[in-house]
Image (cartoon, rainbow, N blue to C red):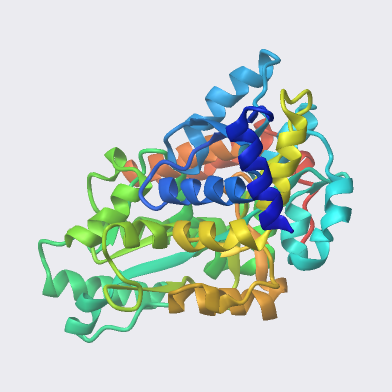
Length: 425
C-alpha cells in the first residue's frame, strides 16, 4: 500500500495535479562522509514522501560552529527554517528557552519513540518534561583511532589508558622520528576539549566528569582538574604542531597521510576514513578511550525539531517521522559514522566491527552513556568560551593561568544554575 501511495503521488506530481511541498532545513554536514549522509537522509525522505522538495542551507564546519551563527540571525529576525540540526542537551535547551521550538509529545506518542531509544538519549532531547527534537543517531565522542598497519608493523596494542597512551606515543616517536604521533586539529577549538575530556574522565571518573560540567567543582582548589591539565601538557610534544590551522576532518587526514598515527575523535570519523578509501579493521582500528576506571561512552545526538511558526509545518512533521524511522537511520548512520538512535535496529546493519561492538555495548549498557560537554551538559555560552581556553592551553600551556580562566568562566556563565537540569545517572 505504501508503494502504491508513493507511485500515486508521483503520478499526480507528473500530471501537475499535486504541488510539491517545501521543507527548509539547516544543517552542517558538509565534510567527507557527512555530505553523503545528508544525501542519504533526503533520499529516505523522498522515498516515503516524494512530494516534499528539500531546500537546504548547509553551513560548513564540524559541530555546527558556523551554522549556529547563521541560524541565530534567522531566528532573531523571525524567519526560521522549518527545521535545523541541533545537538541534544544544553544546546537544545537554549532553543527551547528562546521559544523557537514546538514540543513533540504527540509525535513521540504516535511513534512510541521513547520505548525504542535509550533513556540517556531520551533525557537529552527532553526539556521540562517535553521532547522537542527527534534524534537520528548517537555520536560517541571518546574514540581513539589508529593506523592499524603501523601498529601491526611496530607490534603495538591500542592504548586504553593514559599511561598506555604515553608509552605508545614514545615508541612511535622512537621508531618514526619525523612523525607527530598524535594528530589533532584545533581550528574550531572543540577538538582540544575532546582530548582533555578523555583525560578528565580517567583522572576523575564519571561522577566527577558530570559534576565538573554542572559547575559543582571548585576548579581553583581541585587537584583532579590540575592533574588533568598537567597530563594534557605532557601530550603536547607528541601532537601535530600546526594543529591550530586544521579542522577535525583534516586532523583525521593526518592519520591517512602518515603524518600522525592516532587521532582522538567521535564516531563521525568512521565516515571520513571510509570516504578516503580506508576500511575499518583493515586500514584503521578504534578503541573507546579511556577504559579505566570503567568504560564510559561520552555521547551527543544529532537531532531535528519543528520550528515555532515554521513556514511548512506539515512537511516538517512528515520529515520528523522519517528521521525517527529505520529507513532513514540505517543508511544515514552507516555512512556518517554515528550509532543508531533506535535500539531495535540490529547492530549487524553496520558493515564494520567497530560500530557493531559499540551499538551492542549501548544496547546492553545504556547506563554507561553520559552526555559530553560538546554543547550538552553546560550552557553553550560557557562551552564556547571553555573551548577557547583549552585550545589556548595547547599553545601556551600555563596550568595555573588556565585554571584561573576556567574558574572565572564557571562563574561568569552561571553554570551551576544553568546546568542543573541534567541528571546522571
